[in-house]
Image (tube, rainbow, N blue to C red; front, side, top):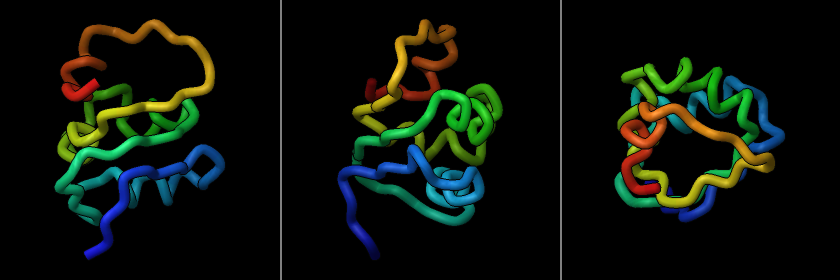
Length: 82
């Protein structure tokens, strides 16, 4: 088991982001911070509708996206610790 508190995938390929956030590949059991590009986050989460990434994304307590964005209401349901 690997414990981490910060995951920076800002410059990683989308496949790696999917592996970390999809509960089929990785099970995250503690809150952590995530640094990611907005477009990749939308892709990996399928516009915040993917059940496969919802479980791990619910553990994110700090989301670092490097541009200001206004998110839809579903975003805050998808990331309840933010």
